[in-house]
Amino acid sequence: MRVRLLMTFALATLLGGCGYNRLQSMDEGVKGAWAEVVNQYKRRADLIPNLVNAVKGYAAQEKDVLIRVTEARAKVGSIQATPEMLNDEGAFAQFQQAQGELSSALSRLLVVTENYPQLKSDALFQDLQAQLEGTENRIAVARKRYIESVREYNTTVRQFPVNLTAMLFGMKVKPNFTVENEAEIATAPKVDFGTGAAAPATAPVEAPAALPAPAPAR
Image (cartoon, rainbow, N blue to C red; front, top):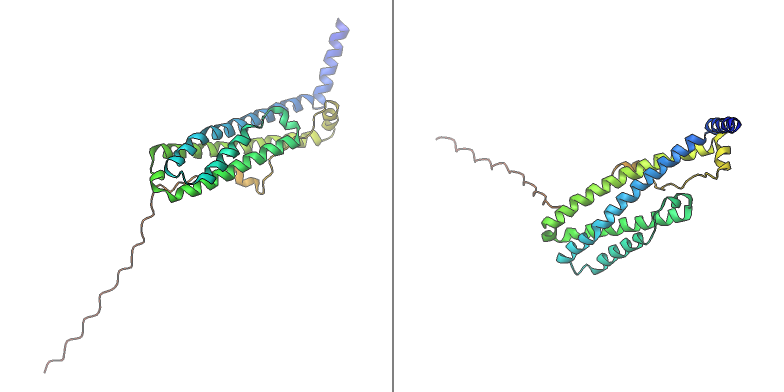
């Protein structure tokens, strides 16, 4: 019994010294950051049916745009965003592509709404605007945290001698979001339905014409 305890203590010391505990802690951090990303994307997807219905009530003729948003949402919903996806680069890329297509479809829908003043003034639509804007902000923050967590984890996995421990336990680098400019993630896309009309420019005031000079007295 005593020998077993000594062996267990020695093994724990060895694993701790080679970075095993650190890797486990960072792996859990990545999973937590990923769960928040998925949660915020789901929040956005849940808003879409009401958004589509609101637009349809005023702009039913925008059928192609509405269908594109609905199909993009369905594609996102068909992908199971599980923690196992973090070990599958192909599945992660598929998830990212589907979310990108939904973002693009939503952007197109918001552009179309600019042509319908009554829609923009609708109370339900304005409420959806606020919810969508808040969700986009949360998505931006969640993605940023995930990117930072994965970058730290992947750097550690590659470092010696921790990389030997990682290889021993099958812990590999994880896929990350690919963006042209990661700094843009910190700033969420602006959701603006143009509820207020721009004030017309004020015309310049012309100076009064000069009065003719009085005729000289005779």
